[in-house]
Length: 197
Image (tube, rainbow, N blue to C red; front, side, top):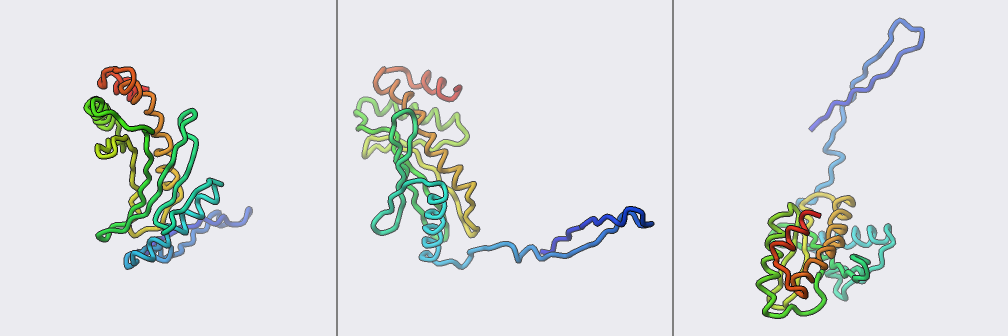
């Protein structure tokens, strides 16, 4: 695709020509980097390099899994809550993603509270446009996960930062979870309080 860029160059102050128009053609494809034929290995290396560079630029301490498959950050979230965020690139069935995930609850949810917390999560997810809360029945825990679809494009720092901040901010639901879990409040009322804040 060829884009036409028009530059306006002003003529001399006292000249007869007040404005000169010059047209320059630039090939926009020369500026777009795509990764259509990228292998899984090269995608994962590209993500690892990007994530390391990004986290170093923002001075965020992180750990890397022994097999380099994911990164883990320990960041401050809600009040004194230690938020551990797991960042993991995926390459599967031709799709390229980066998953951001954190565990909201620290303990095991009792069996008798699973229905109420399930209702709370469903109501919150339904009322918010951008929510990734989930109830892990096997481990009886509440997690928050969102996915950045990379596709065949370059990784974008602003998108990465947005997803990282969204996961970190997800711990703000913890007091509302505790209202249902500890105080036996009605999930529908707690959900209304949360989404109206």
